[in-house]
Image 1 (cartoon, rainbow, N blue to C red):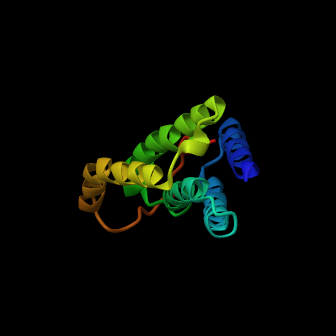
Image 2 (cartoon, rainbow, N blue to C red; image 1 turned 120 degrees about the horizontal axis):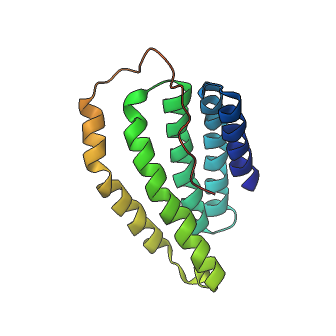
Length: 152
């Protein structure tokens, strides 16, 4: 699973250095979203680890948004994607990573992760409302600049 993050970062870096549009990264993100969904479901069903599984499912949503914004050019989702990236960088990486370093991740309960997901959804309601008011069609041109990928 770590390669999904690594190759995403590599793709972002090479595309930016080469001055390439982010469309390819967007389509790569579609595949990554599918794989992250599979990792999430596998962690929940096979390994009985819903806390990690829920982290993977959140990343799947984020990569799905990258696909929509960068691959399909649905520019009205850019702000929502940016805010979700910022929030998930803390709730799925920074805080869990810190808890792992402290040896406390094993004490995190599934309901706590679900509360964080619910709080994230509530926090994004204003941005989502603005997005819905912005129109229902994709832009004609795909996004040209990559959305920074914060999750690791």
